Image (cartoon, rainbow, N blue to C red; front, side, top):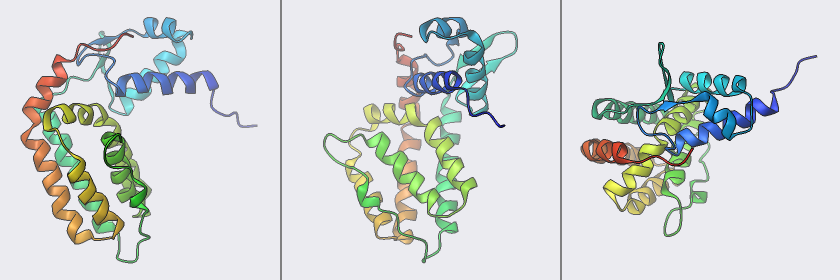
Length: 210
């Protein structure tokens, strides 16, 4: 009989991954498996398994003989991530036909008191899911994770994004691929230009208690 996922391992994976996504570790900081095991009341085995899994997801760095570290993001690597995110979303638009089911983009909360980082992740994933291509959707899920903390910092650097998001949501809700393409280009160009300041602010983060 096939056994299901180990509950402890899955719990450790979820909580440690969220720590990484939320920036609990400074860029390049060593991540001590033993400390995480103590913090989360677990043995070191599921913690190490989690960290290896996060290495595979490109959320943690493993250095030979030096253990696990938080990713060190450079301006070049951030611009590459923006470029790749933009390309994958354009591919998603190409894979979607005019008869593709229109996602309920109006359900994406945009405006005062809403979380723009969660909104943009949901918006982009909707683009991937409406293609019906799981490989494309999985690529967008991965990029959402890799850009999660960056998008939090973007808000401090770029500032107001509600108008930008509202335009993207409206175009997706109306299934207007021709309108979405230039909006997505503008979205990524805006962040490309701000990459220097975004990386500088990322590296000034003091990290949270962990």
